[in-house]
Length: 118
Image (tube, rainbow, N blue to C red; front, side, top):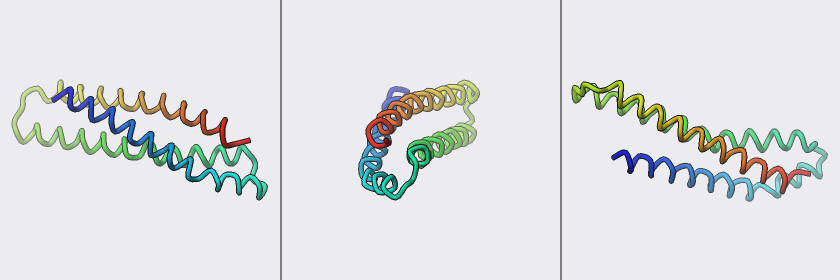
C-alpha cells in the first residue's frame, strides 16, 4: 500500500507539472500581447508566478488535506491503535510531495521566465 501511495503521489506531481507547462505554453501569445501593450517584464513575471502557484499547488494542498483527514477518520472508525504512527507517515509523505513540487516549480518557473519574458 505504501508503494502505491508513493507511486500515486509521484504520478500526480508529474501530471500537474505537465498541465502547468501546457497552460503556460498556451498562454505565451497572451504574454507577448501584454508586453506589446506596455506591461513591464516584472509585472508579467508576477502574473505568471501567481498563475503557476494556483495551478500547481492548490490540487496538492487540497489532496493532502482531504487524504489525511479521510485516513484519520477511517482509522478512528476501525479502532486502529497506531493512529499516530500512520498519521506521521501521511504527514511525512505529504511533506515529501510538497518538497518535490517546490523544486519542480522553481525549475519550470525559471525555464518559463527565461523563454517567454524579456
